[in-house]
Image (cartoon, chains in turn purple, yellow):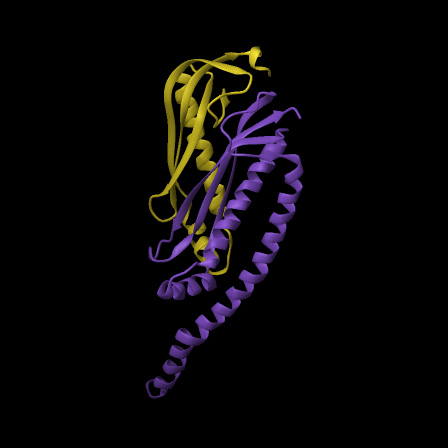
Amino acid sequence: MDAQTSPEPTGGLLICFYIAFPLLLLVGTWLIHWLGGRSRRRHLDEQEAYFHERIRVTNLKRFPPSGCLNPQLVTGSAAIANNYFVAFLAGFKHIFGGELKGYTQMCDEARRLALVRLLQEAESIGANAVYNVRFETATIVTAQNNKQSGGVELIAYGTAVHEER
Amino acid sequence: MIIVNTETIPGKRIVEVKGLVQGNTVRAKNVGRDIAASFKNLVGGELKGYTELLVESRREAVARMIAQAEQLQANAIVNVRFATSSITSGAAELYAYGTAVTVVDDYSQGV
């Protein structure tokens, strides 16, 4: 009984696995990417606007002669995951070349998030300026296959001081 | 111990350079975190487990660097840098290095 009816369900299953499921995944991850990205960027915009007037950020190595107090190392880090939809589009882009906008955005978000966390730490110790800010990037390798990027890790670090203005 | 990533420390003067100090650590998260992360790679967003891992290993690397500086009897580390690399899946190496120095207060520079 089972053996007779098996070819048809397997065909249906194959279509399910190779066409319907990835399509659903693409649409779903595109929605999440679009909505989630919007809310993350709004949060980052708010935070950056908040810190813009309060803390001055530079990557200068030298302090101004006017005088600074309490130098301390501050850091911020973020690990941002890849998105299935973005990875799919990037796969197509590899054929024609050009900018991988999704990945550019992913790196940008990670960098801004790391910097915002650095600023939060600087504010918590009462600093109003951060000197010599540097960024360090690493990619996360996924277990299954190294072809697929597993996201990006970002560390931002700098020297927080309280300077007289 | 004063730790900065600039070449000078405001209000202080470097009187002696003790030498390069470094600290590193390779850390992995547990399998559960890895599985959660691989699911997260479908939808994007922040990998909280890996951010945590990054923070922990950074602290560990800095702590080892400080321990070396203390052995050299330095009271500050200047020009600190971080470097990261992905060794294998789910593991990250973090390397912190800087120059251990002895500093004294210098009021002539204006604090």
